[in-house]
Image 1 (tube, rainbow, N blue to C red):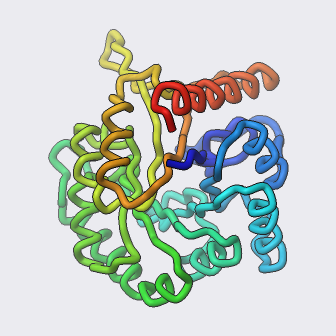
Image 2: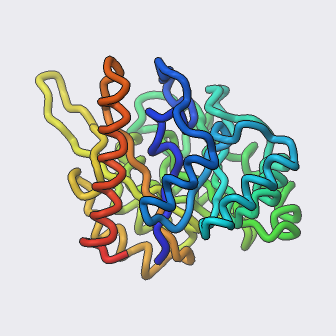
Amino acid sequence: MLLGIHTYSFYMHGLGQAWAGFQLPWPRQLSTVELFDRLTDLGLDGDQLDDAVLERLDPAYVRGIGAAARARGLFLEYNFSMDMGQNGIGRQHEIRDAIETARLLGADVLKVGLDLNRPRPLAASRFHPRVMDCLKDAAQRITAVSADLAAAGIKLAVENHCDTFAEEIIWLLDRVDSPHVGACIDTVNALMVTEDPMRAIEQLAPRAFTNHFKDHRIVPQRYGCKVQGTALGEGDIDLQRACDLIKTLSPTRRIIIETEMDIPTDDKAAALAMEMDTVRCSIRYCRDVLKI
């Protein structure tokens, strides 16, 4: 298995989609090429690159970024959002444009999140009619580009983001029915729709072209609980089991680290150091404990 990282892990460095309205109080800290140098120093094999990370989208620049990754021995995947719920989550282009950007980068996997709005109560909203309208729309739009994916030699991976049950992703994949369209497993996100994350991993692994390998801790509080990001191995997700399922069931030969910490923004130096320490701890866990 190769070990890569999702650029969202460096959101304190300004590298990641503006998820959930987060606004970084300081300028971006790394260029894309500087990020690649950092990943090489960390001993990683590749990067899942957010659409918001690329400084420009003109073809010459994008080809250059792909060449820079290959020169450092890094594989690339590309991440964008369809934004079915009109949330404005990092989308810079439509699916065909994303396929072309991935092709120019030399990325072999294109990861997409639907980012749809679910009705409440969440626990009762699996296959809700409003959700199904979005899923049918997404299936139609993805089916329309299946030939483009085949021609480019790119696999499209639909994520169980914080807005989708695993069974809904499977329904979508069955509807599209293409060998070039599969899933992206996020090992935590099922919690956000009141779903058992281990069950979601089991369901999605056989069709998953990539993953977001992530850990969170459930912290009891007086008025409920907080689901809090941690370094890998420090939370409540059974990552050994998750890794075993991906290794044995999934067609991918990669683990893609994603970290997401509740980091204060009142001290830039401390925030950047905490983020890097989380990444380093997660890499050590994958290398030393999981033997990736």
